[in-house]
Image 1 (tube, helix red, strand yellow):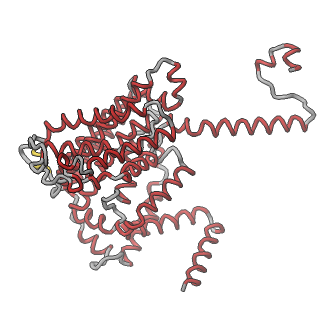
Image 2 (tube, rainbow, N blue to C red):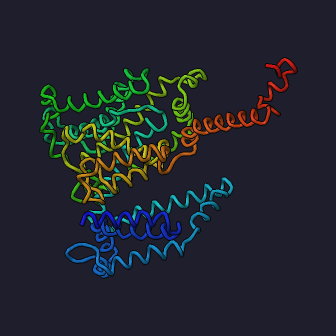
Length: 472
């Protein structure tokens, strides 16, 4: 059987190089579509039943699980028909929007934003608990990734201890709201607690940022990694056990009381709406900062810190502000997680969380808000978080392996990310462009020598330098 399987795969692989490209492309589309529909059975069943399409679910999937033959044929037919019907219309519409004047393009973007917001508000009512839970988890990681995008994507500070701010937000919320807090239990309302969460996160950002602010590159990454582990081990230690519960953590954290309803983990839809509010705040804050004087200072530091300092930018203050903003956004995610789960433990804030959030930012597109959101959906929504399930539940045991493969592939083939910013793309490909230009110039020089040196390649300044410059 193995020999037969190898023979079939070899023949298919050879056929991909012999058959017409269009046929190969259509075949790949059909195979991938059928595989995607079969693997995403749980999510798609939940989604179709939410819209009242149980008849379609029964036709596509067996009741005991698995894709039916008729369902597979239907998916294959749609995978062939949709590209034929749509064609290049999407690209044409995108090009038309890009070519519009600035004011009209801004109006179109606002309309698209309003439509997207309306869909996000309405869609959860048609989804089941599984899909809403998935959206809530994606929103939490979007919130975390937006904060890390400020630190890494805009300011260029490689922070591997970002989970520390996540932990500070969760533990501050737990101490101030839970009646089971071992040392101090004021049982404040969630809205009042947020004020102290912001203050604690900002102070932690300053304390972690101040010692490492002069470091760069690998040294900065290693030191921030150490600080992230220090925070987690302090929460776990017996020394701070009487204050934060040690390894037992803090339990019985109440949900968010809104007066007319209570947001808690047993109602994923309400949690998603709460996360959506915080994500909207984070997106607006990131967007405003990105176009501000401080945002331009961050991007100048990312491109070349020495030149930025020579141009009069206070790099110390700018870096500290990046740490503080990133810490506050991460603390929001920690606060929502504590209210959602109802408990916090040191094991929830492993260093793996920092690494996965960094992968989300890199894969999505550093320095781009839309890229961070796409990266969160692709990685967290499809593969799942460190302890959160994704759409591909069958591959949970191979999740970290897929993360690693995807990261290596993106670094080699598309380092700017899935949805890159124009500035970041120019930065990453600037060196390649200059290298290609140098190689081309070197080749032209050698060609001129072969032609007998008819007309050497010289700079315009040298050409205007007279006979002496020409001899040089």
